[in-house]
Length: 275
Image (cartoon, rainbow, N blue to C red; front, side, top):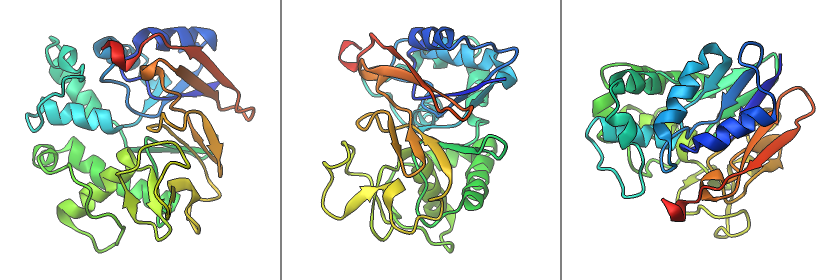
């Protein structure tokens, strides 16, 4: 069995199928991990979601910010943006089934046998892998339970921006969600910054990528993530970014988790400007 990890798809279904063909993915024998942002802004969100669901246990998917945004729209707490492409899911005959599948996905996944963990955006420097599992479980309980609607109504916001175990209520849940789905830069004290979204080196003085904060507790762990198309394929400090910008007309990439860390990429004809 071979395991692959694939970066942000965002509804770019055709490139996904071409990439799986390129690595000769066999769902009866292989497994594929998806780092979140399966849907939205690309042309075929519904087809992408239905296909990944059809893979059953051959696929491992975690939640990204676009899945959270989709749920906020589906629950009536957010109006779609002009560039959103979630309407095909919401208007599909099996919309509730799809919504329920999305809300049941984890925010974090770790495989001790393969030696990799997977998150959509990042982890704050104060958390260990065990911490990440525990805090993911907290927010997953909300997404899978009857508190989801009330959380989605207050999900958006940049505060609090620093972890404190004593955080409670919405502040605690928002911080946890922001780390898993939105994090890119921190300051040297581990405070989150959501204003900077560009390539490494373009940020304000005093900010560093989350994986370069001194003293990060997960510094010795192999972590896969997406969410950051402006740095593209990036291997640094034992972390690997797999968001190679398919939506923007870049690449869709798969990492082979067999020790070789071979990257297979295919070109994506889709660009946001053509939405």
